[in-house]
Image 1: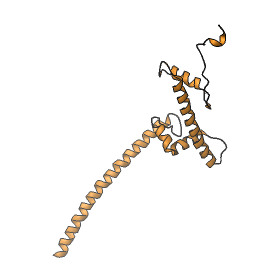
Image 2 (image 1 turned 90 degrees about the horizontal axis):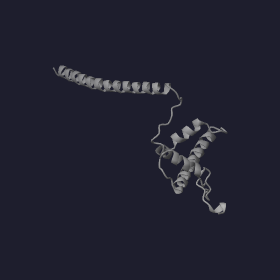
Image 3 (image 1 turned 90 degrees about the vertical axis):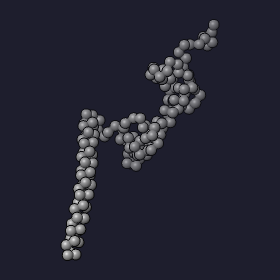
Image 4 (image 1 turned 180 degrees about the horizontal axis):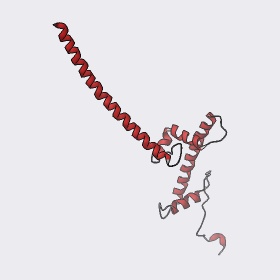
Length: 152
């Protein structure tokens, strides 16, 4: 048998599309990620298209942010700002938490401090409303007393 007629077990798929990302690499990662035992090539092509589209959107928006800052390069901060300013991308990435400005142990401590301060502010606001209601009651009693004294 000729070599061209035999099927090789590790056959590469070369789609006749204008995809930049490798369909074979996406298919291999889908199989290795234990998402499914068998991955049809159509699913890999579709996933490759989706990933390429999202990457293009990220780069386009972050390029606009970098251009607004009159910079030549896109920094990770530009990418983060672009994602936070885009409502559609926030919905896509809703399952994932965007990183804080500084990555490390301090971010969790800072967020805990912020939550503690927010709870203190809420407690103070509650106390202010309680005091204002008490002051209103005192003011009304003083007005009533002054009115009763002025009549006599």
